[in-house]
Image (cartoon, helix red, strand yellow):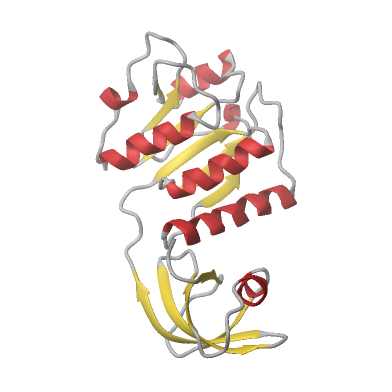
Length: 233
């Protein structure tokens, strides 16, 4: 894990004074017990990393930004298109997917999904998990998490697309994957894609591929796909 690191959703500028919001401020004071004068790191999920000095630890946590570095964004877009799973599986996908390099998570209600929608609180919980994951793994960019309509309403995709196919005759993903490209990868719910969804995926020019000889759970398959993609880039 990187050094003591906190998230703040603003552009970071050298020499500015910032107020650390909750719950990051609570973590700094109550968990880490960080004293005034200590240098910590700030990230904003926009490819910036700052060094900052703690000025006050009273009602408001004030920090003085002393330096800022900006890195290039990820060279490839890796979009995970995931049928809505149960909440515990969603949390695993968000956390591990962030660590493994997905740049966006597009959630959609699958025809056979047990869960059909996310509340605002549940979506915010997912975003909070992603923030914790970038702090832990050292990433400076925060994956975008959005909820999309059912697949039947999707139009043309921005990048080459693949979907996890349970057909034993489907080609292996590693043999089909264009390693230098951006990518959209679709994962179905526990019960799989419906026939209607499979037809629409083919209309979207998505290729059905095998990730593994075994049938994978909906929270295992995306991690395998992301690992193969990021290791080959």
